Image (cartoon, rainbow, N blue to C red):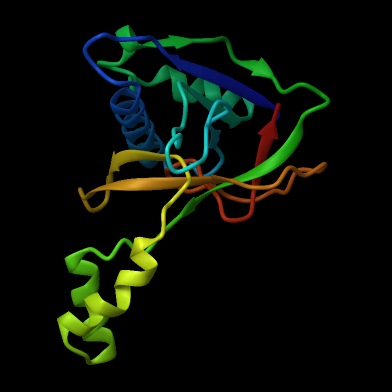
Length: 189
């Protein structure tokens, strides 16, 4: 994780930045899946948290070794997005950078399909499962999210992203095909 690449969204009068970030992130997910990459992490340096302000921001930062970032950028994963993004050069991570974990967070949103699965697992009625799920589903989620489509299942969902506490030392580990990890950190600066 000694190099990074920033991809910034250009302002667009026809598309919201949330829609463009979702499209960009979905394309990155497909590229990471196709490359079988487990050594590329991501972060959203301009993200905002809070129920009313939650957004990943307009910048997606990729973290990896220089050769791996060059390999990613050699494939045509940005097809259709080039007019909507500005690519910066691959650069070394600043020496004074701290580190943080960037991971997926899942929440009980009380959807009908989730209530049905809960009812089946616990041998209760669907109505009772929905009633039990109302309280956790009512809480307000303050994390930024991106709307993406899963490469493996084809399902569209909100991917909530949590930027963990700052740490002075990096933690090694593997990343999933969304560039997220439960344990590994990425540089933060």
